[in-house]
Length: 345
Image (cartoon, rainbow, N blue to C red; front, side, top):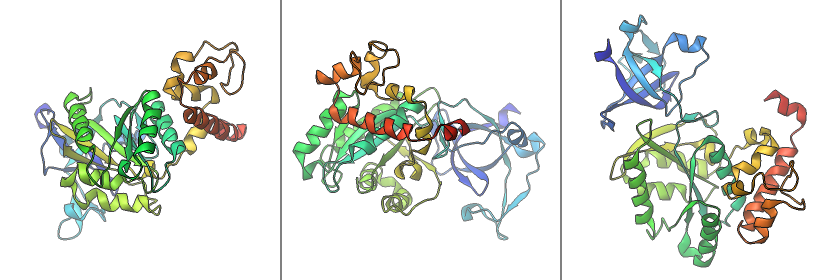
């Protein structure tokens, strides 16, 4: 049976089924896609395949699962003359996940590219800081992109300084004029070539409405055309509320970079993070890390206490004031959640 197994990556959900893009010798073969169902035992084990999962496919007949037509699937590309789809493959195994999220439902994300405009609209630092909190909690590397730098170069430089000081990789660009885009494209090539233990590198672009995410993606990934643009424009208008997620393999120059189109990030649904223990929040701000355990009081909240190592670092200019302000605001949001709600999570 081993010779008939296929390894691949789930790229999207299709009406209860899963579209899997096979990967051969670590490389995606363009134009190939297989439709598969999850094996029955996954349901018993309460396991749900996610977009981004690295999976093993086996022929349905070898798994003692019938390859019956599926009625009413949402994917017209796979339909027969009668509107049915014959599913010949079964997801027999899901490889270990680097991370997994409920909203958006996505697994194995490596990079979160947080986009913030220098102007038009006004830059929202709190939104970016919340995104970095999400990323830190899931083990995702944040990359900050200051877009529309041509509109206000002084402010763009100031924002870049904030996140460079906080310990993040920062790119200052103008997707409209192309300034700085070569450096960002080169970075994508570097990380796609390095790969990870799971065999591919994936990333998502996120940010507040009007930050210019779709313009950035169109510039970086022109081969996708309208495939992502249509979805991204909807999310930027604030009316796209579906939980649809899709992975698109792109050629980053040195290897495949899998772009995740994730409306969940764009919609900035931070509800789950209001249920995190408040004492865990400081660890989501990486510039606080070397101060942890050095405060005078063991239960220091890093807000106003004497002898707080975080506040001392802030006073020395080693923590950007806006980052500490965001910490205070997010902490207050967490505290506003009633204890009885926390216990339900």
